[in-house]
Length: 629
Ligand code: NDP
Image (cartoon, rainbow, N blue to C red):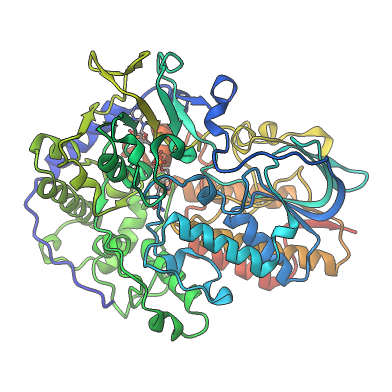
């Protein structure tokens, strides 16, 4: 898609909008931050039971392997695949679900779908030859694809399914990790890869009376089709006589609300903060187009997509969708003569761009004549406001009841929260059985035996569905569900109690032969599989080099770790101001921004991070890692 100029004229008052954004944020900031949520354990542990498989018995295993990979999602699968490509095949993948897929194994709610383009999101399409059926793939096809990947690399034979790791313990004498599971397996591994997923642990709101409710409840990541009928494609026929409440209006709720609206007798959607809902425009894949792509096309495409999203130089928008449109508008027309040394904007969990980055990026590219005499920061803020005006106008035009439409309008910068792309969600509010319960930023107040209370009114319902998301800012071991105990019994909780400390996000001093996959102190991409693939390539390089050198122990040096933490802190400072201006959510640690600036992603953006890692690998010296034979 060719780049278009942004030549908008603005018919809003930025001062009024800025004030409105601030007021909406202030309404939502709470002192309890992450503590407003309940841990899904003890009396609540049934919320994470696996509804998709029958449990089975097997004898405990006692085995020695080269590599244990914890997690059978895309991260674990890619790690195994890239290791196998390097000739490292003695691998055990431990996965608590009944199959591969990770987040896609668990999230089978009706309408579950990926709104990152499938040609970008599904990794290794060139290696597998798989042709996704649509531009945006749905959860069933993604699970099917996980099976394709598993078969291609023979991963099923390496997997221990329905098995949960309970602890990993370093033994200095043998230079191995002892991995224990809930099935009493004892697996001794030279290396352990932690690929347990950033959004793996469902959370519930800690609201008065949550245990009193006598009706049916479940979390969206464990959808109870026995109760609702239907499947991931919809058809929730058992709800025809049921009154249903759904709590939350994030990316998950946006996808399942249309199906609930179509199936339930009455649907009450309890909203705290509206999501931004842009056009999705799904369409079938043209196989001829895909089959005629040149080798290397997928890497080129996903790099192009992430580059656009972080302000890195591109001449063309290959994906051409709602995501890239939003960014094109933010940065204005991209010029061919764009200087290559420009600093890139960063995709930050707490907001995409810092004012500094806006300044650097926008100075070059914003060409809007209406904004000619403004400083660059204001120009980009205006471009963002204009984007959000479009989002708000869509709600206004689509939703017939204008009070409901008003409630559905998001008032914050677009990338303060995960943007959503959907063509049916807003329309659902035109159905007579669908009711938006707008809590004005406060959330539901209380549960009773019969239902949900807000503003003194009790909504009696047969079922409450929690679309309240996943733990992000809590302790690593709590989220992972297992302890990690390294040299001299050092735990990761102790190690990181005063802030994250890693080398390249993957290694931590005191935890030899241990590799962490995830966004922390690493390059984070909207296409999460992209960063997992980069992590996997990096891991495979290190293990293959270690093997060549006959090493049996790999640990980050103290200096390398300290230097990396400083890099993360320096880069994180650039995004803090933007994050503070945002409405709370998991992107900005529920409004408690940068208490520890090192608890961040790599603020220079993923493309810069991947380039840095590539250079580090090319150097060949494994600089910063201490290897022992
Ligand atoms: P989120 O954390 O994004 O949303 C949780 C929702 O629950 C928010 O709307 C939140 O409101 C609301 N909430 C929390 N507590 C209360 C309360 N007490 N009363 C009322 N509402 C409450 O979780 P999701 O599962 O929706 O999404 C998680 C992530 O998964 C996404 O951000 C995205 O990264 C990924 N995802 C991706 C999809 C894709 O297409 N690729 C699809 C679905 C999910 P508030 O905003 O005020 O905090």
